[in-house]
Image (cartoon, rainbow, N blue to C red; front, top):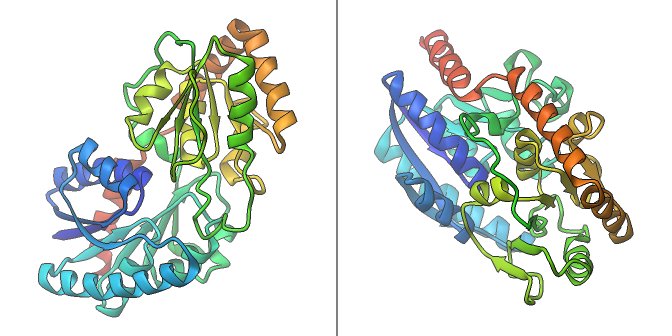
Length: 339
């Protein structure tokens, strides 16, 4: 059988790499597509993924719509040429629409029911949906998929690529990830990360702040380095503290035992609701809160770090690797879908 995987973000590239390896281990032929977008193309190259870039990323509402419609047409031609037996995507509106229109079974995977726009466009068209166990089925069923088509796994997504990864002795490095400000679900939200980094970097000149920038935000100074794309996981392993405006790196940092401050500029993500009460992550809603929390962490760093690493070690032992679980389930479900 041939599986077509469509990936649209660096996080999806990480998951797609491990899913493709597991699919191939089961005897599937794998073809992958992505879109022309600097961050994801950098991830694809870094990970050595063979994915065909089709279509582009849009920045405003009208441009997002126009480019999505264009990409769907291009993917239609791709699917007609490749003739896949199934499609696997991560809430890709174009892949979901094309596979539904051509009668190709489509399997979605996501930990982001807060992404309302993409969920409304993809979830009702997906044959099955895979999601972490902490996400209630109702969070997905409201988009139009029946509960018996939602399959849970006991893991946070980064467990697929954190096997054998351990934190290193922390350097005097603070890793910062900016918010995904141009995503459809954050277009009207103002983040605090840029101002927080400005305040902290002036107060702590002994620390180096490495900022993973999405769109070129954040002013540079002697102890602030701005990167558009890099091996974020390698930087995270060396970090003393992580200040993160996105969900995936927050999970990675928590599972590695890195003291983490979340600056995600909206209501609590579901994974934050799980991680924060357990003490893995501190959520801040203002620059002043962020400064106070940062000073609390660095003021008693050895103890805070020790507690974070112990919690992370215990938590990882309770989780599975989602990649082999998902691919094995897809294989059995495809057998049941055959006429």
